[in-house]
Image 1 (cartoon, helix red, strand yellow):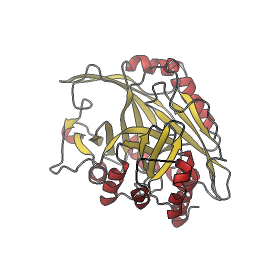
Image 2: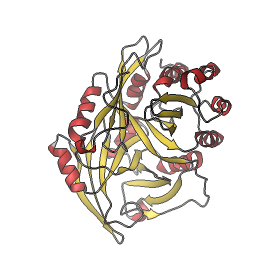
Image 3: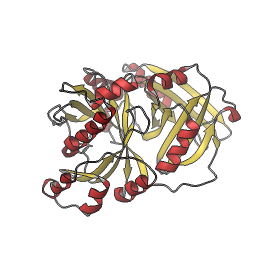
Length: 375
């Protein structure tokens, strides 16, 4: 591993425009109604809004799901034609939009275009009785976009066009808090292109670099660079495959997603043991590591507050950096294509991404690849 800057510390002055945080993540999916029920029941999200034919929208249906600071929007097409239907046909269920919350969407969009971005949506004002939102968007890797959302003159639920909605039942939240980072997979030889995009267009900084010596197993390898904005609220690791004896997890993703896209979303919790126990009880499936992994944890990580027994029972991984330690675990893919999955992470001071766990993690992924016949 090489580091180009201390993890989590970048200079805000380099940002092209200030980003307050993640506004929402929108998924384009085959059946948003059923996907929303999955995220509510399995992950503990609450349905808060809906947009569709009943609200005057004729080409799509969207469900707004919320848990603490997380906002997920699940959108399906209402017919076989158009960009949403084509996206789902090609990619399956996946992330379309990682949206930024900003103070001035017009200025942010203009600045991004001046620095080389391609517009996916020119600034548009959306109004209803609760005020107005200004929204624009730029393109990033594959068919993924970054919407740029200005909310200062809006007091409504989410976006104009959405109406309040809820389920007659109320699944308990599972302790998920906010987006820690989002990881993108790109083709071989394209990682540095997209690193430069985030540097040149958005002013992000490369805070960590992992080479194929750090992220490798007997069979496969990958390379990764972590991009962060100035306040550290937005972190985008970007992966590309590296040469190996077998097909890497990145190659598998690119094959089944039919191109680059968001590989996984890392979501923070304040109590990973309670969160993972709850998620498992609701049917969420996680990768597992051999019991021998935990024999080396005390010597490798040192003293931690948690008892190792529940960590081993649940398969939670532990790693340490110069600022503290972290606990993390990864779900299996949450759709039939082996593409998007989730990381649950609890940081106890650590600003890194669990490099000490990479070998165990990627061997676990390879075991799943082998079961699918894709290794």
